[in-house]
Amino acid sequence: MRVANELGAGSGRGARFAIIVSITTSAVIALFFWCLILYFNGEIALLFTSSEVVLAAVHDLSVLLAFTILINSVQPVLSGKLIMLPTSLT
Image 1 (cartoon, rainbow, N blue to C red):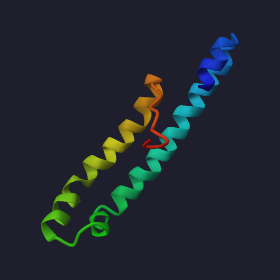
Image 2: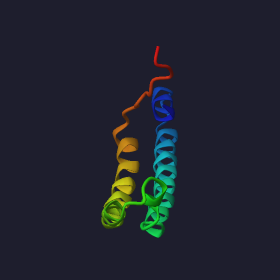
Image 3: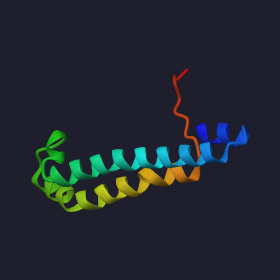
Image 4: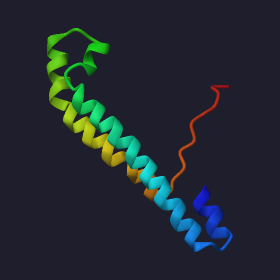
C-alpha cells in the first residue's frame, strides 16, 4: 500500500525505499523462521503427534519446508498482490 501511495504522489525515491523496506522486513522474518525450522526439525512434529513414522517423515521434509517458507516470504511482496483474510464468518 505504501508503494502505491508513493507512486501516486509522484515520489519514485519513496516508492523505491518502501519496496526495499518491505522486502528486507519480509526476508528477515523468513530467515528467522527458516533458522527455527532447521534447528528444531526433529522436534516440530512432537507438538502434534508421537507417531514414529510421522516424526521421521517430518524430519525428512523439514528442510523442504524451511526453504519453501524462505522463498514464499519474498514472492508475495514482489508480486504486490494483497491477500485479504475474512474478518468474520458471517
